[in-house]
Each structure stands twice: as C-alpha cells, then as structure tokens.
Length: 122
Image 1 (cartoon, rainbow, N blue to C red):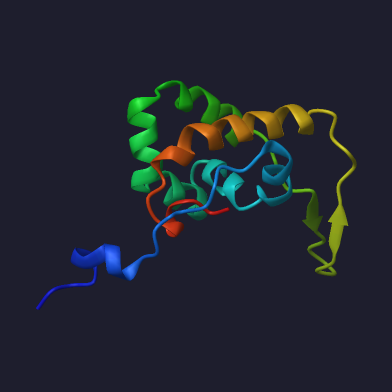
Image 2: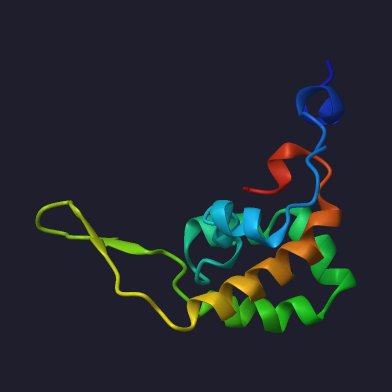
C-alpha cells in the first residue's frame, strides 16, 4: 500500500504563483513573516524546519543572519488586550519599512525553492 507522502505530486498542488512585486508582498506578508517568528515558537520552528527553508539556507548561508534580524522584529501591527480580548493597534514604527524590505529580500531568496503551494505561507 502506497502512502500519501510517496505520491506528493498528486496530493499537493504545484506552486505556480508568480513572484510578487514588493507592493503586493507588503499587503500579504503577515503569514510569510511566520518563518521568522522567534525561536521556540511553534509556528516559527515548524516553518523553518520545512525543506523549502532548509534548502534555501543550505544554498544561501546569508539567510541565517537575515533570519536572526527578522526574528528580533515584531511584524504584527496589533496586540490583543489580555483582559478584554480586543485588538490594540500599535503606534507606527519608523523601522517597519526597512524591516519589510528585509522580509521581502528573504522572500526573494526563499521563493525559488517553493515547489508546492504548502511551501510558502503567503
């Protein structure tokens, strides 16, 4: 009996999305930023263990330094009030445009390694 993993081309859809322009990427990057959630966070560790990330890291060691910088930045525009559960909008961060550009640089490195839709959370 063949497992679903052995036949991944039929189980998963091919990644055929075009490369996003910076302006479009910025509008949709919140899920991609999860690759750079802090070490020890389940979603960040899970995304960084994906073959798409590991293959890119193997070919582009400079991704490690970029990832460390991105992991230290909070890409979320809001927090949740623990008492009320309501969102709290954060004040504008002057570093955000610079960090979004660095996040896009990471996307440009990783994107060519995506083979299936499930490879990139964007």
